[in-house]
Image 1: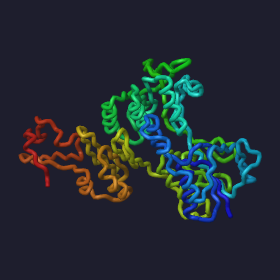
Image 2 (image 1 turned 135 degrees about the horizontal axis):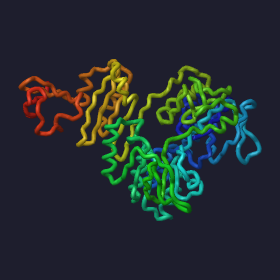
Image 3 (image 1 turned 90 degrees about the vertical axis):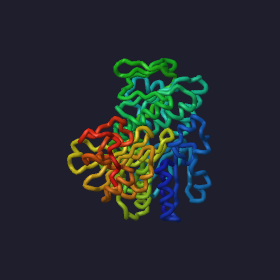
Image 4 (image 1 turned 90 degrees about the horizontal axis):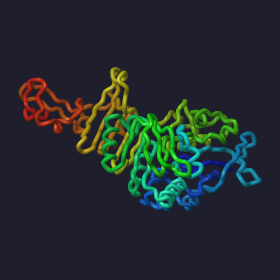
Amino acid sequence: MKKIVIIGNNVSGTFTAQNIRFLNEEVEIDVYTQEKYPYYTRINLPELISETVNLDDLIVFKEDWYEKKHINLNLNTQIKKINPKIKTLEIEGKDNPISYDKLVLALGSMPNIPPIKNAVKLKDDKKGVFTLRNIDDALEIKSFISNENVKKAIIIGGGLLGLELANQIKKAGLDTTVVEFFPRLLPRQLDLECGDMLKKEIESKGIKIVLDAATEEILGNGSVKGIRLKGGEVLKTDIVIIQAGIRPTIKIAQDANLKTNKGIIVNEYLETSENDIFAVGDCIEYNNQIWGIIPACMEQSKIVAASVLGLKKVEYHGTTPKNTLKIIGLELTSIGIIDPSKEELSGGWEILKKADKKDCCYQKLVLKDNKLKGAILFGDTKAISYVYKKMEQDVDKNELRELLELYIYLCQNCGKEYDEALMEVLFKDLQNDFKCPGCNGPKEGFKKKE
């Protein structure tokens, strides 16, 4: 019987184990992780801080799930060395190495800490600087807020987890500020206009947003007192939580002489540079790209499961970035290319857009040569199933207009059209004194084109 060892019980490691078992009921599967807990979802970690959920709610697969699947889960286990030539792993605190026939590295990633003066020291000393990546991080933050009577919090990073964290920190009763390096929130998922809508919605909940702001220094010796931005502005705070992206975990792979760059380099079958060693998830680099998103982990886990078992039927070609989630209670879907540059827009690209700022809804579809290439659906996601189904396929523009409820209004006097798909403002939101650009007629002189 083959013995497959997986290092890591994160989303990529756990679903790799599940997919291997689905394809093969006989092979032995051992999962090793330094985590204390079976597989849990990181997305809901901020809710642990606000006590919206308890620890048990986060655990997706309890220990009996592993037993039923005949997957051997080894918690609290630190792998300290891989010996590829003799196919063994050395475990911290144990004399005898363990052997494997095939090895899958699902090492995940660690929080990225930007080069901010005092950040690493104050974090290591547990003096009020934290990152949020696992359950223990969330429990530490929650404990610090309670024990140190924290009143003000700053989250550095306006990405998905940073914004949800800010929402939960606010729910915990703290004065909350998000500091984002880029000039808009969610720069990977939203364009400038939608980012501005999201900013206003978040601010309406009492969370402060500071954009286009580089943090240079965290102030304080024994405890955090504030941060200094580039330009000199000081923001006071009692706690700083850094959510500024991730870095692939690769050291153990480097020590074993596997090829690495930013991540562990893999081919289209997710094989590393060493025979019988595979890698999956946040730790990998394929075609000079790191993915770091859950859809990529899920897709890769199916491919690597087949590859490990010698069933090389499917090749990995990268994952179309897509996110569907709730941010501060609002539905958001972002998929594919969402903001082509001005230069690109002259070469066959088209945009259909509906921005209803009063109701905080934003829908944008990006086409190229009549193919759907990307979408943002914010606040209203009824088009989501259509978008997922039609990505990279030819689409009917009239069908899209109907889907987004975008209409053409016709001036009954001169025939001038007001096409909502091409305008920044919906017809209903135009001011009452709007005049027809063709004949200077009144707004009420327009009728919806059937």
